[in-house]
Amino acid sequence: AQSVTQLDSHVSVSEGTPVLLRCNYSSSYSPSLFWYVQHPNKGLQLLLKYTSAATLVKGINGFEAEFKKSETSFHLTKPSAHMSDAAEYFCVVTGQGGKLIFGQGTELSVKP
Amino acid sequence: NAGVTQTPKFQVLKTGQSMTLQCAQDMNHNSMYWYRQDPGMGLRLIYYSASEGTTDKGEVPNGYNVSRLNKREFSLRLESAAPSQTSVYFCASSDSGGMQPQHFGDGTRLSIL
Image (cartoon, rainbow over the protein chains, first blue to last red):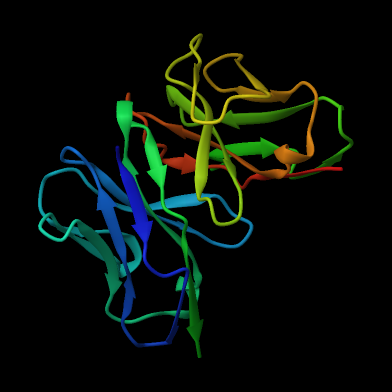
């Protein structure tokens, strides 16, 4: 069965410092992986997706994620945090029939 | 540039009442979805519709029904609301044939007393 674990429920960084949001997955086959962002009182927005092409995936707003099969990880990074990055981030893996399986979310706080 | 529009944004119901949540998209997408979001549980798929005229159960369909009225609209109905259905409900759409929603509405916050 497919599953996804976000290793931190909350991450706090200072503006201008790097962001690292960690995600591990479990899958019996080569999965598709996604990161979504959710700002307060808004719906989710797709940040980036991995679908077995390049292992380093670039997304919107300067985010990127690296697929590491040996570590079963798909961590999300950004070189320099901005105040507008404060939101909740979801790591997602495809499950049976292509349905999405969501992680529990990581809340990112950005301090001025 | 509306995207996915959900109504209402907020609703309070009493146990046993019925209600329909409305969703419409203006992107000519084939696939539409209903999710619920609960604290610490991410999003869970309730129902989806791969195309007009078709609907399928997701992970947590019990207590809900859906109607794909036309290509634009996909409604979610609670026939007899229960406190366990207190949640934030999101409608989403995509133009792909798979199960990956691309665009989400802003959600309906539903409380059942």
